[in-house]
View 1 (tube, rainbow, N blue to C red):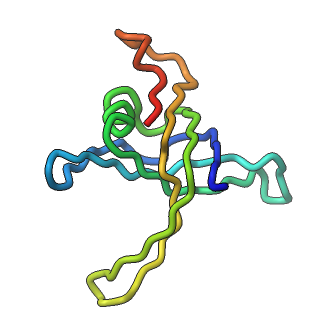
View 2 (view 1 turned 45 degrees about the horizontal axis):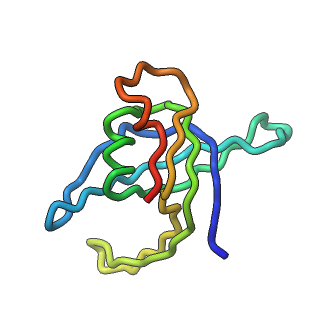
Length: 116
């Protein structure tokens, strides 16, 4: 089973990228607070997230840096070779469902939830 759900804030502005034949994608990072604090204060994890197609479009249209969102999806690992010819390994969340958790005027409420 590969399922996860996170609630957190988007770390950067949402930018769409078009990849070949009209496919769209966005990459971001979700800041997720831990349930506990330590001597240094509140602890936060920064989780890389990726959204494709309609979910990417919704994120781009209705969200911006700092927005509180709920995400559900799955973990994915992949690797690539960077400019220095080094192999980089990455673990990220692929978003299947997006939930808006803070107020914002939305023209069409039916767009608030999308499942892929």
